[in-house]
Amino acid sequence: MNTRRLLVIKISLGFLIDTMWLGAYGDAPTAAPPLHWFISGQESARAIKEYIGTIDHTVAYEGQAGGLLKSTADTAQSGTLMQTASARPYLGKSIKMKAFLRSNDVAQRAGLWIRADDIDGSTVAFRNCFSRQAPRSFVKGSSAWEQVETTIAIPDSAVVLSYGVQLIGTGAVWIDDVSFDVIGQYPTGEAEHVVPTAHLRPDPQKMPPTPQNLDFEQ
Image 1 (spheres, rainbow, N blue to C red):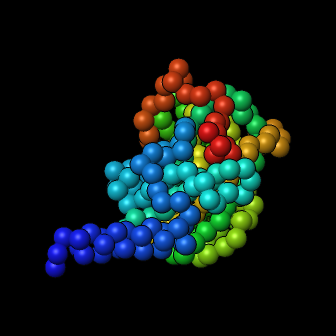
Image 2: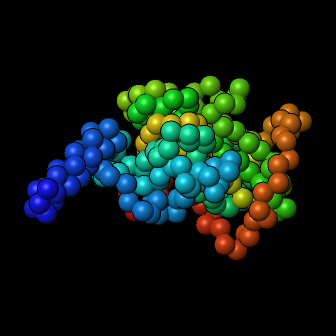
């Protein structure tokens, strides 16, 4: 096979792969996640290898872009596109997190999650798309844009919030127009039992004071 013919075949294959990606997932992924967002998961090192988080300029609920979390391995287990911020604005409050999600070939679930940790890195509040108290927080399979939500009470001991979209298994999920609203006071005397899982100790000096780039336009 001559060099020129080999080059034509490579170009054709590359175009075919890009076309297949665009047809299913929008823009081909870039190396960097959206500004202020990053990839993590129950096993962060594994999640970084098995999932891509990026900006998609062809699929958005509103505006010019949306966030995209996509599996890159058939063995992908759990990944998140997430960010962190100070819990200070929400101390002693019940809050509602809302977002618009769209999915493609999600094998299990893709949904919202939020966690609050104290100064020692111990979890003091937690919700994800499998929580009994969050029945409207996720999408499955292939779906059009759908607004999902979850509520959580943030105790006064919280220092940092971690939050985003979680993808369990393979598939792709887009996220756009994330919002946080205070809906009431902390339900004193009705605190939920939370397994005090230990995470890295937060540094309040390095945390954004509020959630950032929730519309993925930056």
